[in-house]
Length: 289
Ligand code: NDP
Image (tube, rainbow, N blue to C red; front, top):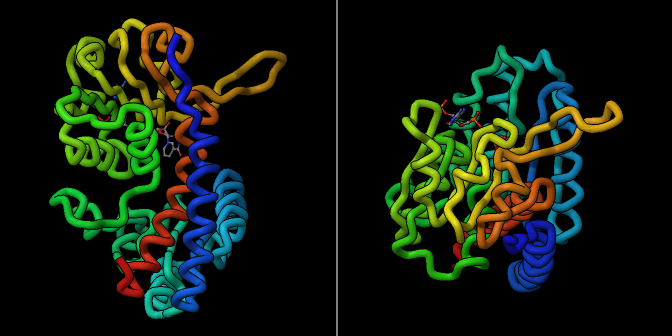
């Protein structure tokens, strides 16, 4: 049976480290790192995320600001707010919560964020820096996955890594990070032929698909390390729903050497890495190494 990679515990340890870093930063520079989250509309899931982000931010000693805008906010109004935050020196990190209402072009808004304050790591400048191996703000979910893999495996060089999913926020940056670790990386997606056997070749298998339990046990090589990014709500017992990942956990755990659970794996690391990025952005803005 696989070892459990405990994202909850790893995230708690990272937050404890960040709390010390923030205190030291305040002591030496007088600057309290500040994260500003912009939420447009009433999407219930986004409201929960934003609340959790604010709570985690203040718990490590950083400043948390929120701008909650009505769903009929125009693109021009949102861009004007981003522009103000870009030039406000008390704002170190800017996060525009997605999804945005349909009448707003998300790509245009993300492109308007100052890359130095882009703590989500979605700006093309940060994506480009990651691709060429320069210091970048890296998207939080793949960064959290990388930290867990480093803890679990140490040196990954030469390992066969398969990332299922090629989104800009998870799949592609995850593949870049694994390449930087000198893995041999394959990116699989909806057009991949014989995806089962591609996955069976993986020493490291990262599933970021959004399809409940798609990766079955017999897709997993004996002794592989499995990171399950998926968060899917499916009908459970007694009319209640439950969360499952993109990997059939019990089947995969019977073959893997280590695996992340859902919930309690990648999810908690994502918010902790947002705080990590905010501290990193603040340090870079202050020209501290
Ligand atoms: P996207 O929908 O943007 O991307 C999904 C990817 O999966 C696409 O590249 C798509 O391929 C691929 N895919 C879809 N169906 C198949 C299939 N049948 N076989 C192979 N590949 C397939 O999703 P995200 O990357 O944003 O998120 C992925 C999952 O991770 C979701 O469950 C999401 O909820 C979760 N997530 C979790 C986070 C966390 O904090 N734990 C944070 C972010 C996401 P193609 O490009 O060919 O269409």
